[in-house]
Length: 127
Image (cartoon, rainbow, N blue to C red; front, side, top):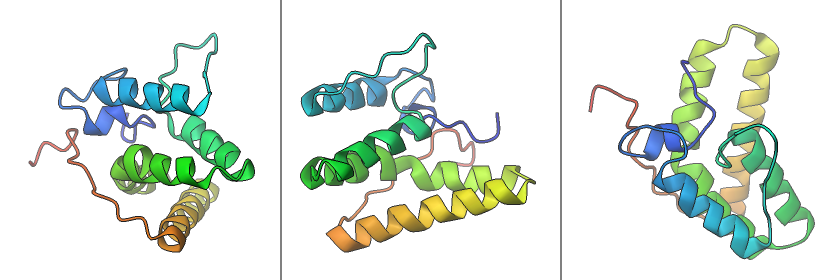
């Protein structure tokens, strides 16, 4: 899979799903009062699920929690995903969606003064 949609695939040293970063994010979700449970054994750090939680936090005006989600859980790996996704897709609509998502996340970070420490991409064999 050229652009896995899970954060743990990029930032966990073993580049595995349900890794340490997923567990840390799950704890964050619990602190927020969320439990993501579905019949699909999908890690909580899936990009779509994380964007859904971000939207819920922003809608509920829980900006402090939204800022933590961005700074500590989503943005440290989003650029790795975004670059791989953009390079892998040939469908223009998907590229536009990816660019729009990146622009929105960057705007939220800029608005709230969030400084992101991009984490190492453990899927990148050139390191």
